[in-house]
Image 1: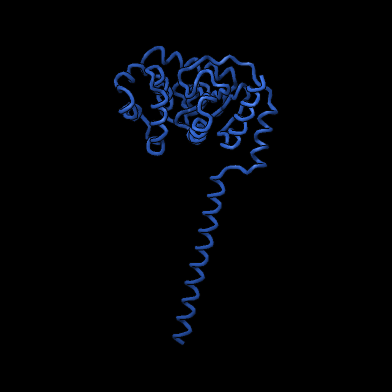
Image 2: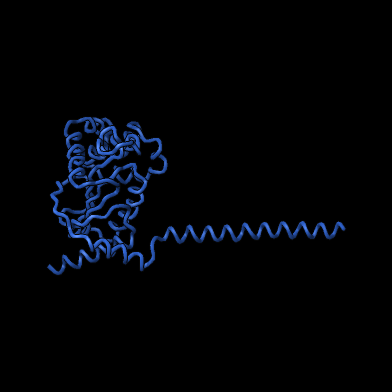
Length: 243
């Protein structure tokens, strides 16, 4: 019967569309939930685990690769690879922390490029040209434009991460600083010395992943979720007020 066949066809089409609608809704909800980060219980567990570790005795050298005032009561030292996807993820959290806490928190960066070209402590290169990215960041700091250069670098991360090169690094400099001046600093012996210092210090601290954070001396490996970072900063600020 043609009528029955048409009805059956419509039912099949409706069933298929309904399946895809349910699947798409479920996928969107799961992605949205994942993007919101861990829930309150998991956040507290992360913070409790962080504070279960004793502060480490260390003497990190002062760096001009920093965002935030020197006298901030909370210092977050970040061992990073500037092409690392997890480091990019944490940078998004850093921006929110800086906007929220302003002069009360300082982020200081140390280089650990996952690139065997300059880092003998990694067996294989994961992010090609990340050695040059570290040198470019050090050079930007030495020319006084680190924060602006860092912001522009990560604002372009989606486009440049897989095709990063010295030319890309110099292109980022446009509108921030003179590209020739940046290149001169990239090639300077002092830039190489700072990178070498960071890598030797990383070996002594047994750095094995990026990002690795030290918040007032306590270590955390990985991209610390936003709410966990905020909770830790609040606790550190409370401790600083009590001194």
